[in-house]
Amino acid sequence: LVELFEQVSESRLYQHVADSARPETISHMCREGFDVVGCTKWEGCAEDGVTYLRGFNHIYIKPECTRVYEEARMWSYVVDKLNEQPTRKLRKGFDHGFDSIRYSHERMITNTQTMWDTLARQREQDAANV
Image (cartoon, rainbow, N blue to C red; front, side, top):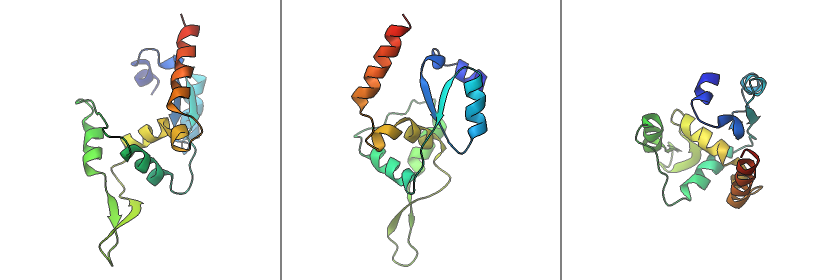
């Protein structure tokens, strides 16, 4: 995993939000010098995250990200067998890439940080690394 992170230039300069279900991986990456924190989970967090992401007019996926593209294509809700209506529960199996996208937007989903806060923090880090 360290080798993958190091393929991204300046990956040690920014915070990464990871699945909190894997604290051993988070600890390992922190020991390797990366700023990695666990995501916050609450009941319905996946559904809240999807609702947030679907609020964008467009989600751009690079052509080489074929698995994420396939996930986006397969994104759907479980259908109630009795009334054949979609429920609020997401269908499993097509969510790994979008889980990571949700984690990175967590503070905006929970309204604890705005996009402007994120940009200001990035500018501060950029200035400190000059």
